[in-house]
Image 1 (tube, rainbow, N blue to C red):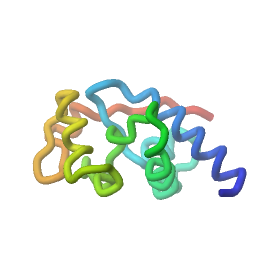
Image 2 (cartoon, helix red, strand yellow; image 1 turned 90 degrees about the vertical axis):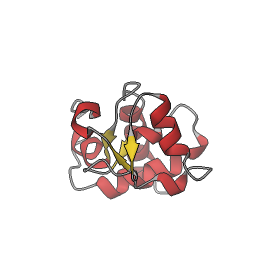
Image 3 (cartoon, rainbow, N blue to C red; image 1 turned 180 degrees about the vertical axis):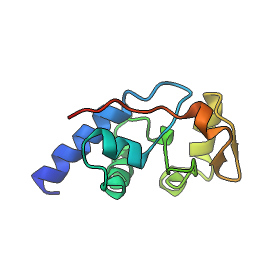
Image 4 (tube, helix red, strand yellow; image 1 turned 135 degrees about the horizontal axis):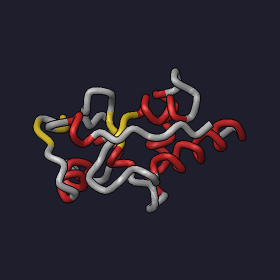
Length: 110
């Protein structure tokens, strides 16, 4: 991984660590907070690469409409959903119920 990517990933992880218990944010919201609004996909790659880092709550990062698009990167069939539901976030058909209520907007980091 290029040094720039590694640095970007670490910045993504810094934001992800701030997501409060029982809240979710989106790949795009993290990218925007980092001043890289068009880099939502790269935020997704960072989340995919975070599975060995226990301090990254990757299950709290979803797509812009609240879909659990990263769920296939978790061990077990429904682990992402189970983790969210254990925090009081309802999920139906792989989508967060009351997404706006659970959405957390990260602060701008740059």
